[in-house]
Length: 262
Length: 268
Image 1: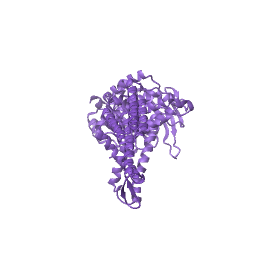
Image 2: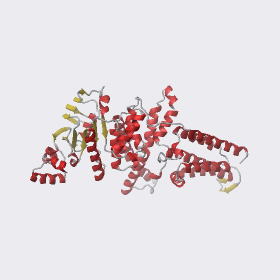
Image 3: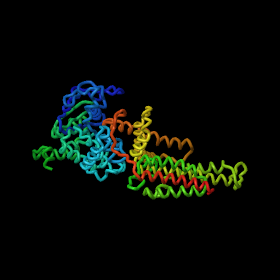
Image 4: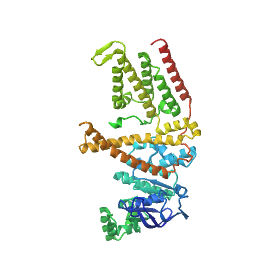
C-alpha cells in the first residue's frame, strides 16, 4: 500500500509547487490512472514514487515504512517503470540483454536470469524477437519489450508514464491489452499515467491532477460523469465517451458495466 | 544516407565469426592492425585483401554492403592518397607542373597507404558488425580487469562505451530526421558559402544536442530505477567462453603474419 500525506514538492528553478499538498492512498493490486494536462504534476508524482526526488515536504510511506532519503533505493526495488519513449530506456543491444539488465543489477545468478528472460518475453509475446536489436522494432513491440524488462524483477508496482502516447492505435490497443493481462495474472499494482481519457476505463480509480493538486478522484463512472470538472482542469472528455455516456444514460447502465459486457 | 553508416552497427548472425569470443575478436583485430604494417609490396597487400574478403564472406556479410558503408569516408581515403601523390618523392617523374611534381613512388605509396587505411577500417567494421556492443564491452571489461587493482574504473568505462555504441544508430536516425525537417524549411547544406553552410550545420547540431541531452537524462532515470549503481556489484547475463575455434582463429592470424614475413623475406 502506498500512502502520501500532504506531500509538497517544488523544483529549484520554479516558484510554483509541482506537487501541492497531495494526499493519496493506493491499495495493493489496484489499477490507478493519473490524468492531467501537461505540467499538471503527473510526472513529478511518478518521480517522487520512484524515489528520484528525495527532498519533499509531507509523508510518503510504502507498506507502512516511511520513505526517507536513506531507504528510498531499497524501498523502490519493488517498483518498475515504463517511460513514454522506449528508445530512451533501452540499455541492451539486443532484446534479451535489455530484459536482463535489471536482473544483472540485482545480482541474479545467470541460470536464473536465462529462465526469467524467456518467461517474461513469452508473457509479452516477444520471445521470437529475443536476439533482435530493440531499436529496429516497431513502436508497439518496443513498448512490449520495455514492459518485459519492467516485469523481469517481478515488481509489486508497475508504473506506466504515458507509455502509449507515441504509439499508433493498434500499438496502443496491444499495450493496454498486455497491461490488463499482467494486472489480472500477477495482481501487480498499476499506476497508469496518461493524457487519454479513453485509456482509463479499466482502472479501479482515476485521479485528475492540475497545477500540482489532486482535483478529482473517483471511479471511472465518477470521472466520466463530471465533464465540467475535467474541462476546468484542461481535460476534454473524448467524443466517443460523450456519445457512450449519452446512450448509457438512456438505458441506465454504468460505463464500467458496459465495458465488462464488451 | 546515414542509415548506411556501419560504424557502431551490429548485425545479428550465426556465422563462425559471430560465435567467436569477443576477447579473441578484439585480440585478432589488434593483431591484424600490427600485421597490416608488415605489408610493403603488391604481393603482401593482395594477400591481406584476400584474407579480409574471406573473413567477410565467412562472417556472412555482403562485400558490397561493406563497401557501400566505406563510401561515406571516401573523402578521407582520397585525401590520404593525394597527400602521398604530391608529397612523396622518388622514382620516375610522371607529371611536372612547375611548382609541383607527381612521381611514380608517390603514386605507389599513395595506393599502399590508402589500402592500409581501408583494410584497417574494414577489419574494425567487421569487428563491430559481428559483435554486439554488450559483448564487445564485456570482452573489453574482462581484458582490462587487472587495471581495477590500480583503481581504473573498468566497469564504468565499459558501460559508457556500451551505451555510446548502442545510441549511435538512434542518433543517426535522429540526425536524418532533423536534416529532412530543416530541408523542408528551406535549409540547404550543399549550397552557399562557408558561412551559410556552417549556419546550416548549426541548425542540425543544436537540435541534435538538445535531443541527445534529453535522451541522456531519460536514460539516466531509467537506469537508476532499473537498479544500476556505479559502485554496485553486478552479475552477467553473457557468458564469455574461450572455445577451440578462438584458439584456431589466433593461430590463423599468426600464420598470416608468418606468410607476410615470408613474402617480405623472398622479396615479393
